[in-house]
Length: 286
Image 1 (spheres, rainbow, N blue to C red):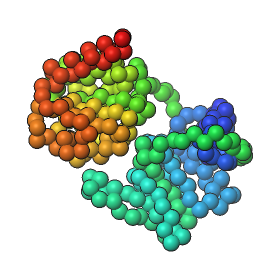
Image 2: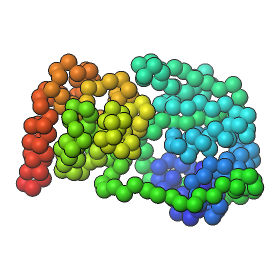
Image 3: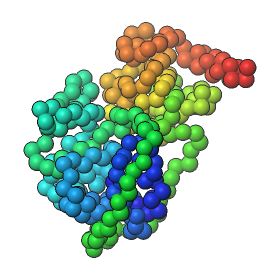
Image 4: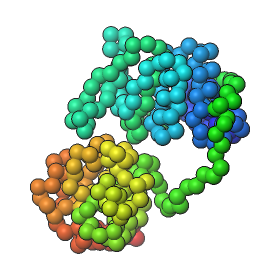
C-alpha cells in the first residue's frame, strides 16, 4: 500500500522488490506525515479488499497509523516483530522479550491481523519484477483533517543515515569526552560510513539522539559495525546484533561486547582508532 502526495512513481520500485500489486492513493491531503488521514485511507482499503493481514515497517508514523487502524477495525495489533511464520495454517509472529534474550510466539484472535515489523529485520531483495498499480480513493474524515503541520524541520547531516549505512562506527563512554567523538567521526568518514552512539553518551549530551543505537534507540544491521569504547550491555546489543561483522575496540578485556564480537581489539582506543583511520586512508589512496 502506497500513500502520499506525488508518490505514484514509487510504485515501480515496489514491483522491483517483490510486490505484485500496489494499492495507491496519491492525494495532496496526504502530503504531511500525519497519521489520521492515513488511517482513513487504510480503513477504506482494508474494508473493501478484506485483507487477512496488514504489515507495517516500524517507524513513529507507522506506529501511530497502525494503532489508529486497530482501533477503527477493532483488530489485534502485534508490534516489534522480528519474524513471521505460518504454523498449522495460522500466522505466527516472533517477538523478542527480556532484552532479546528469548523469543515469544504471538498470534491474533481476529482478522485482519495487524503487525509492526522491527526496523532492519528483513533485507530488501530486488527481484526484477513489476507491480500492477490499483488506484483507490477514500473520504477523509473532518476530524482527521483538523490537525495541520505548520513546519517540518530536518537535521542537517552528511553521509548515510545509521539505518542505511553499510558501515557504522559507534562510540561509547570509553571515549572519555564528547570532543573525542571526532575520532569516531574521522574513522566513519574514511570508511564511508555513519556515526552511532550508545544511550549513555546520548543521555550525557555528548551526541544527538538520532544516532542512538539500542533498545531505546534505533536498530541497525550494517555489513560492518565498529564499537569504540562500548561495554556491550544487553540494551545496546539489541540494536546492533544483526550486523554482519562486529568489531570491538575496548581496553577492558572482560567487556561483555567481546562475547558476541567477531573481532576484538583490547587496547586504548585513543591510540588504535587514529592508526586504523590512517591505515584506511592509505589503503584507499594506494
